[in-house]
Amino acid sequence: MEFKHESNRIYLNDENGNMIAEVTFPAISENAVNIDHTYVDDSLRGQGIAGKLMEEVVQQLKEENKKANLTCSYAVKWFEKNIQYRDLLLSKDY
Image 1: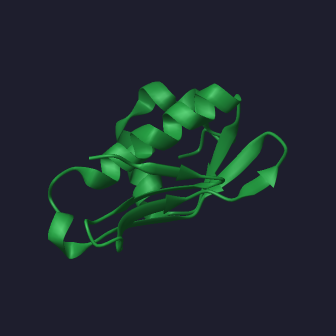
Image 2: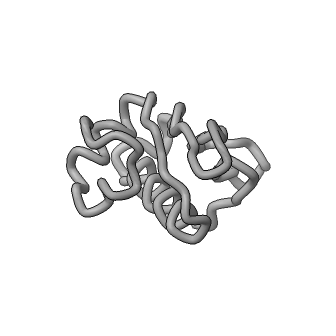
């Protein structure tokens, strides 16, 4: 499984080129993004794909030395469970 990276978006396509999973995180400043949307197609549910998308975002944030705001409900829950990454958040209230 190979995720594709674009500016402020990480996604996965199926063999036909259809997008089947994505996370978007538009910039809100030079050093911060807003993780605002996570999507996983029904055919992939229960396989941990959304979590893998979050791990990809975390890696990108670290590489780019950026912080994140969370408005996606899945991202909020994921960061609550993965407290080792809370230093990447703009607000520690999650």
